[in-house]
Image 1 (cartoon, helix red, strand yellow):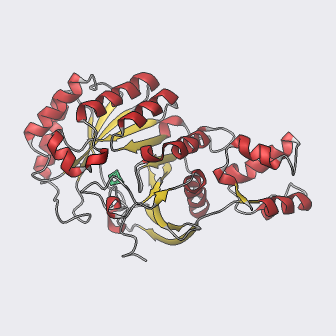
Image 2 (cartoon, protein in one colour):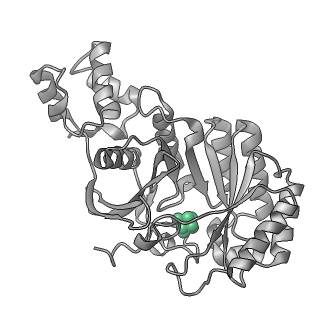
Image 3 (cartoon, protein in one colour):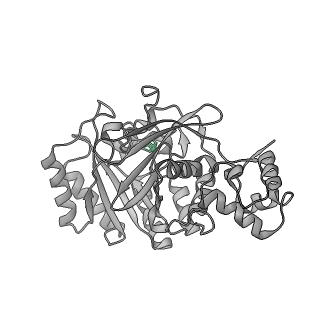
Length: 348
Ligand code: SF4
């Protein structure tokens, strides 16, 4: 049986490949072809003798995903890809370009078990975790397709990354490794709905990457209605985990807050959010709040607040010395904005 190279750690690959080559310089050449040159076929490994290339092809394969659809936004550079897996499952990834940086927003699961009430991805039945290789391959294939060097990765696509912890940590190590992707830790962000034990575990790994916590409300009862009970940790515990994360890693924390009319956008909500952040010592230059006006295309049940209300929410936070931005959604016309990555069947 052939092995999927991208599913293997550096050491696993070296051990398995030892039966084909045992010179270190040859192994380094192979790793370069895979990660630096993003080659999708052993045929292309031209500095390897043909006999070795054949042996690799007999023993390993390099791609497990196929791009089956690609849609580019007319309003910005955002491109949404649909991938098909070997077991015929579908999921999204998105290419984003802003401020001279090209990034990929990757999916970590097929469907999402958390099923947030306001998110399209949560409406897709959870099937399985994506493997290490299937997450890495999204970056490799999008870089190949766009011909643009990828220098940022966001775990904000389909799925809750902290529920696929082992594979996500494998991928993070690969993205950070200078022998593989060599992406700077400040340009990698993992987003989580607040799976507290996993966030603490990630903090203890001290990888230095950025963390985004999707809070979305300051009211416990409301949060339980927005985010399924099984995965809805207490707001206090999530913020404690956030502080633990920045203390351990000296990295950056973003609090994501999707603003929905008459749900979580009152002045009282803004004041309470500021008080909560203050109490948890989360008002400092390592923390910012992203306000995301809800996109009504996602779900008719919720509406975005009026512009004045969004501005007022922001002003209250700013008055309380919170670093706050209103996030402009990217690729809205192709349903590639956050929380819209889900309605695959309507596109196929
Ligand atoms: S917001 Fe995130 S955790 Fe919630 S359903 Fe969507 S993808 Fe899953």
